[in-house]
Each structure stands twice: as structure tokens, then as C-alpha cells.
Image (tube, rainbow, N blue to C red; front, side):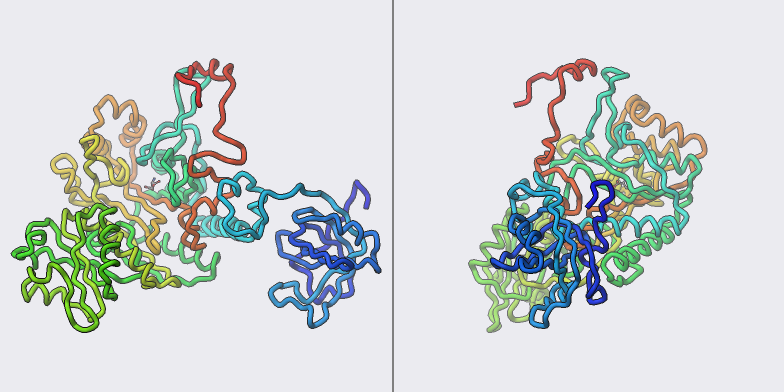
Length: 584
Ligand code: ASP
């Protein structure tokens, strides 16, 4: 091999097949596995396309075979030789290249590897260790699959959005706080000492300004930064398909997004999904599924008995603001019911009333004796089932029964794991009361338009105002959400006021938006989709970080580079920043 011009490979490992039998080929890649049979050495050589088996025979290629004894997993090799057909008993039907192997006569160890911190085929490797050596972790088939899926998803989205006439426009990363309900990441400015940029939680205001600026169909694959406490489905840097359009029409927007989802599901995983997606109001979702992101792959729908139990002799039912129940197709034992009660309490219930309809027709329940014939009739269920109740404030009942519904659905195998159940959730409330801060908060964000008819309520009865907002949910995962926006300066100021932003604060924080709204702002609206959330749904992956090449861990740290890290004192000085205490 010449050092200057190396013919590294003629084909990818995964492409070698019967057509190549008899020809001479070079392959290059990583050692996936080496089996040393004393004489013969077998190596599974892997590259991005797959695996091909190399055989080193000391009688045919003494030098290469001697070298082969030194190689270990994840060494990088170049191997040249003749493609031969395997004997029928050696064919590996699991492997696309399983009918052939490369009879190596020239072998080069291109790049060795020190002993690995974990084996690529090892299960259950600690996540921090995987992230610390992410370059190794990325070589595993699962991560290869996830990131290829991610690339397919993004290219499908781009194709669809561009076909619909949307223009990709980039917005800045250094900007001003955009309120999406999370904490901001801030970046100090050296040139304007004492001032800070915020990393965008989303391009929300900027996309509105683009539409006001005459770009009437905008999209972007945007990175958004949210300094949140982390969970399995939350990360600090998310990627979002961000969309905005002028003169929006809800049917057009929903159809466009449904078409985009159908294309993604078809191109990425070959699934045909049914459109149009059903729609459900937020109130309905809460009442029937106890969630604003209902998983419709399972039944166990929540039923209401508030009216029917108004005069109940069971005091808890008679006085609770809401009485609702689910019918579960299993007659639970006392021990199981105790566990379910503990579960319900974790979600805020004070107790868990139940009626067990045993197989023998008997009703087992401490509350049955308080219930009238007509109440019992309403709750009566198949023998071999249990009715579980929630009786409390509506929000508590929804939360508890919603959680029980999902828990039992999975535990009892009632979830149709093959299904794709999309649903639009509409008619969200505009505001929710924040007990800690004692003020209204925007449910979506402060630029969301009140639904037609709710405009006046913003000032008079904010709690009753409905937003022109919508979320898209699939299998219980919220993958997208958006709204129509306020395009009138006065209405926007009213919403800010309802959120207790003083005139001064309004000007300071959003003066530029208010100015823009006063200069010919067209009606507009849009939506954003979480790319990682879509991927989690598509790949049925429970961990969002596994859909990202280089994520931070749950403590918000990158175990690979060690970021975030300390900075030089001199840099802080230039920025005019003095740390109160040295970090521990
Ligand atoms: N900016 C919103 C978000 O990031 C989406 C939207 O209203 O378009 O959730």
C-alpha cells in the first residue's frame, strides 16, 4: 500500500454477496468480533453498512494470519482477498452477507484500540459510561439505527415543508428571553458588559416577526434551549420543527401537518397511518382520559358519576366536586387493591374506593352497602372486573384516574402496542392559576390568540378564556403544539396585563413585538414539533437522549467533554463577572 494513495476499499462490508464470488476485493472497517480457532481466524468486519466475515488461513496467508492473532475488538483493519462462497453448513442466514466470506491474504491493522471500557454487545451499560465514551456507544446498532432514523425524519420533513412552499429561515441563537415556560440559559456579552443574551427557548417571537416581515410561510429545524430539570423525556437542548404562516386556516394547517406525519411514518418506518386525525377538546381529554395527552391505544375510559352520586349515602361521593370511575377487566385481590391505593395516593388521591365484581357474581367492597340500587346499577360491570373511583376536585380526579388508567393498561397488557393513535387536542384554556406566584400563567405562551368569543374574557374572567391552540399527540406522547397568534397590539397588551406584566415591563421585554404589531401585522399562526419526541414515538424508545448524538446526562452534564466547565479568571474579568463562591 502506498502511503499517498490508499485504495481503502472496493465495497462496503454489508454489500458483499454471491455476485462478488471469485473477485478480489478490499474491505475496511472495525473488528466486530474475532474468533481464533488456533489455526483459522475468523473476523466479523463491520462498517456503516453491515458485517462481512473475514477468514485468515495460516496455510494460504501466513503473514496476515500471524497479524490476525494480535487484533482485538474495535481495531480498524483493511483486508484484501478473494470473495468465496461458504459451504452450505457454514451459511449464516441471520447475516445479509452470510453466504460468502473474504479469504484474506493481505491484512493491515490501520488503527488499534486500547481495551474497551465496555463491549459493544453488552446490555445494560450504565448511561453515564455510555455517554463518557459516546464514540463507542454510537457504533452500536441501536444508536446507528436511531441517528439514521433521525436523519430520515429531518429530510422527510424538509421535503414536505418545501413542497408546500415553506421557506427555511434561520433565526439567531443569541437573542432575548422568549417565554415558553422554562428557565433561560443566558450568555454574557463582552462588548456590552453587564448585559446578557438568552438562548431561545423557541424562535417564537422571531417566527412571528418573519411573517410580519412578509415571509408568509416559514419553517426551520431549530434548536431550542430550555433550562429544565431533566427527566427521561426532557433535555435542555431540543430540536424542533418550527412553522409559521400568514392568514392561517386551521383546516389547512392540520391537513398539512397530518400529511407531514403520514410522510414521516411511511418513509421512516414504512407505516401507513390514517388521516385525518381525530380531534378532542382539552376538557374532553381531561374528563375521559385524565390527561391532555391521552394514549388512545388502550380503552379504560373514565366515566362520570358526579350527578348520579349527588344524593349518595356514601358521603365522599355526595360531597366531592367530581366523582368519576374506570372499569378494569380484572377482579383485584385485596393485596392488589392496597398496592393500587398506594399508587393512587402517590398521584394525590386521599384514598381509592372500589367495587370488585367477582367471577362468582358477588360484589366485594366496603362502600357497596352505602350505594343505592340505581348507583350500583350504573357501576355494575362484567363478573371478573373492578370499578375504581376518583372523588375529589376535578383536576385531582383526572390526574389520579389518568395515571391509574395508564398503569393498569400496561400492567394488564391492554395496550395495542402495534397501533399509531394520533389525536389533536383543541380548545385549551388560555390561562392557569399559579398558586405559588398567585397570578395567571399562559398555558401555551403569551402570544397565543384567545379563541373567537374569548377575547373579552381576557380582561374580565381570564380563567374562563379558551385559547386558539392545539397539540398533536400520538400514543400518549405530545409531539407538537401551536396556536393562532395575537396580531393586534391592543389585545396583546391586554394578555400581557392579565399576566401581570406592567406597561414598563411590557415595553422592556416585548416592546419590539408590540411595535411590529402596530405596523401592519397579518393574522398568523403556527406550530412546532419536537423532533426528539417524534423520534421516541417512531422508534418506540423510552429515552429521549438515545435519539441525540451527544446529549447531556440527567444532571445536565456532558460526561464526555466534562461541559459545563469552569472558565479562566481573565475571561470572567473581561465580562465583568465575579463569582460569589467558587464552585465545589
Ligand atoms: N413556540 C411554541 C413551542 O415551542 C410552539 C408554537 O406556538 O408554535 O412550544
